[in-house]
Image (cartoon, rainbow, N blue to C red; front, side, top):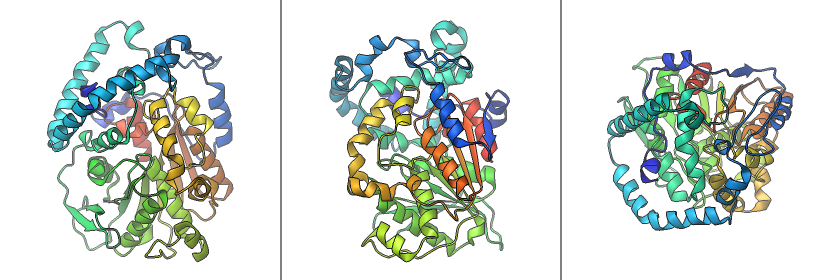
Length: 446
């Protein structure tokens, strides 16, 4: 369990081209009816441990029967309580391991993770498929089965905030930073926040293109340094600089504080480059922040004052950027939706343990249940937003939210591309250096 926690996002470094050549099918369409996608998704759900449908069969929990797994996956079950007790005793040791792992060089951590992954993958190639290829679908790649066999076990243990923060601080293990110059920008309004401008492009008199990066973590986790490697990777592939905005986390702060931090970051960037040179990218809760910033940027003063309250400095109206990329955006905070509860049976990231942890904090995210509607981007007006690309897995927890977001934006006249890949987890795009299906989706984004 300690090794698995420490290598939570371990992935191989196979070339993107090789991954894409082996990739499974994905679907992109800007004219697809998102509500039809939700209906199709509902039709695919399992009635028991092994879902059966005339079109496709999906498998939860290695195909083990519900009566066996219920005690381990239901809150208060004997099996689940046993694993919680095990983690309670192991927590002090885990925290020591996390403390020792955190300062290690990214390249060293990547080397260790890749070596372990290659051995694990080789094991899957030689052992019986009937035992080791028990992921959600038989149609996925061998790599997806292998990753499933690592990630699935985390759902048995509670997911406290400290473990989420460690895991998401290690994303650069997948794509170690390549040494691009970094300019650190201290927030002039919030002490302790440090955003990072990564200079991927060579110096030029022309205004650079910039990718504004909003990290994810369900508002309770995520940081700039942990996202530096993936952000630089995207910048190099897209041919642009990257600006990673630091944002406050819950429960120490509120969702509105994170949105305000991103808003001020965008405002600062506009002083350097024109809006048409900027594309925003948001991961999970960062995607929700991006959408809310876009909505508030074109709203009137009264709307922004209602949202931000007495927070200062009061943000002005801002122009829309050239576009925005949303990876599994988290956009409805009013409830734990049916899609989240249903797909948590398949999702490695938005697992029942994660859902329980976030649900306990839900009313605190926006400063009270009465403010969650105002905070939720899905429930606001979408008119006048810049073009959106929404990338999501058909079997992840946030699929229903993102399909509904695409439908609402399209109905409001927004240029929308909804890209859907089946059988993968939340933010699977960050596994592109490992999963062929994720590599194919990454190439679509690029």
